[in-house]
Amino acid sequence: MTVPTHSGIALSAREIHKSFGGKEVLKGISADVHKGEHIAIIGPSGSGKSTFIRCLNLLELPDAGTLDLQGERVFDADRRTSASSVRALRRRVGMVFQSFNLFATHTALENVALAQKLVLGRDKNAARKRAEEQLERVGLQDHMQKHPSQLSGGQQQRVAIARSLAMDPEVILFDEPTSAIDPEMRVEVLKVMKELAEAGMTMLMVTHEIQFAQQAADRVMFIADGEALATGTPQEMLVDPPHERIHRFVKAVSGVV
Amino acid sequence: MLDSSYVIEGLMITLQIWVGAFLLSVILAVPVAILRRSDNLLLRFIGGIWAWIARGIPPVAWLIIIYFGLSLGIISEVPVYAAIVGLGVVNSAYIGDSIRAGLDAVPTGQWEGAASVGMNLRDTLFRVILPQALPVMLASTAAYSITLLKNTAIASIIGANEMVFYAYNASQVGVNPLVAFLTIGIVYLLFTIPVGLFARWLDARVMRSTTGVAS
Ligand SMILES: Nc1ncnc2c1ncn2[C@@H]1O[C@H](COP(=O)(O)OP(=O)(O)O)[C@@H](O)[C@H]1O
Ligand SMILES: [Mg+2]
Image 1 (tube, each protein chain N blue to C red):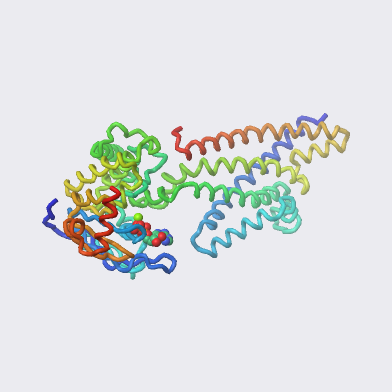
Image 2: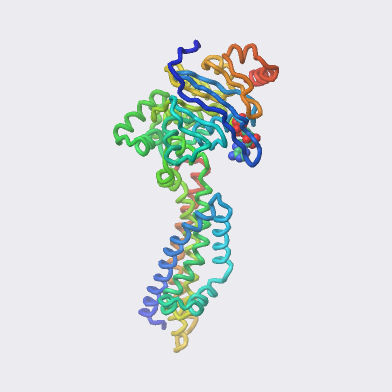
């Protein structure tokens, strides 16, 4: 995939720090995600990838650092953060979790329509229409009335992607979206993600799928011990890694896949 | 024979205490559960102390303390009100546990899923969390309300004229005590059995849904 000509920065994170109970998990990570860009984040487990990506939509509140969306300051750890400004940011930054987190008592259609009505104030018919479109887009037109417990992991994750898309986010964050899914079902989720990338969606994805990162990412970021050790093109990072540490990691992960 | 009109009059008072104490305990239990789930250590401590005191003193002692001890004007003058307040306080600790257990039964991923699409606390609670937590809360709440109904019997000690009060009086004036108390025992069962079945049905439903089988 070619590096797009970037029209601007969609999301900018500066010097994000986060500690849990005195243990510093993020030691000042920065990232700029350009509009239409797809960044893959890789790194050993426990290195802080999830914490970093959760800081970007304030599921974790950073102890220090700032967040900008389209050049607009939306979070500053030095200032008081109101609940409404947190919600305003989350409206603009989508999130797809490893464990899907679909609303258990709602059908696939309701999962995708609910926040459109409650958060964006769309009327019932508009929300439903948009939900149907997004579910079709991820290939679930035949499963709209099913509850999450009646869907496979791959199907649930695609509902979760549709739920996020229906909010028209400026960026979507993915935290190991295929790790909790049976291998044979992963491909359908990766296919949807590739289509999103090709359609120009701005994406930041934590993933262990090296082959997928190679195909879909414009840049790859390696996080180790709460720091961004290196960032580069997939070619630089995955084929000919700049550090021995990254080289070993890529080899180990590719071996499993 | 125990006069049936007395049984019915006593039953009305029993039901008044039961329903009154139940409603009061739910109203008290909501803040107790919120305190006990708080991130703040002090608030959690206060909630814990409430539950500890409410549960640690026998219900009969609660009623006597409230009726005789605290001359709280209106409350101390009417035994039925004292019984409602006393049993309401005791039951609030248990209902608080029910609410807490119900909320704990909902995975944090459900909160995060709602947060990730920008939902506010109220919508998250009413549209996502409570639909899952409520069956869990109701199952244990129904079970506790059986205990509450049986505990209304002790209100006779402070002179509330509920069923036990009438049965005792009847046995004092010549009715066979066995007959008098068997009669009201059956009346209690008429209420505890359906509520118990309801609790079991809810429990089974909750078990089914948490083990992933679609209902
Ligand atoms: N809520 C939390 N409370 C305490 N420690 C946490 C919490 N979340 C993550 N951690 C810790 O932070 C470190 C980084 O975790 P995480 O961001 O999940 O790593 P990764 O996603 O790279 O596997 C781990 O040591 C983890 O135990
Ligand atoms: Mg992780």
